[in-house]
Length: 220
Picture (spheres, one colour):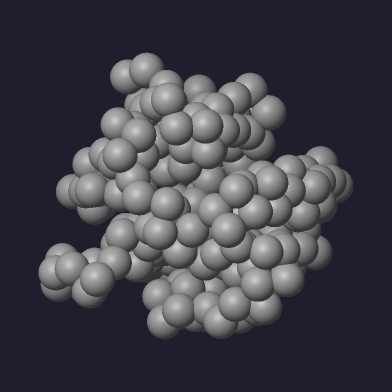
């Protein structure tokens, strides 16, 4: 398949993409050396993020121009609750974070900025722009899961569960479905902005979990 939509966006932002793949948080995950404190912070914020990501996928479903694509995004929105959030609910108690704490913890600034960006795109822009905006979340998690899995799963059970989820066939199918939709669309100028901004927020989200500020300095 000629993936002009997705591959054009990725190639235009290759430096940011690779900086995510080699981020200290990601490297420590693969090595099994990530501290429980950092993993706990990340999981808590990811849980908050998914609340709004669910809404964005629901809007994508409503704006989808075909019944097939509407069904795909509807199913993905449901999977956010059924699969990814359940992973967080499973992991959090093992990190001494109660379910109540996970559900009520305050979102941090990058979480707020990222979800505000996604929601603005969802409500004000085209279906094509929404697909471009959500693509980095889908695609980078899949690529991270595959890359880390190929290096060998860490002994840390929580990190191993995370990697196995995002390198697994069920998540892989979801990513392929979104890539398939993307590559049947036509890029417009807003798509470039939406993808690039989301990709940069993905990098900042990892940094927030690691305790790095926007300049790359440790906050811890």
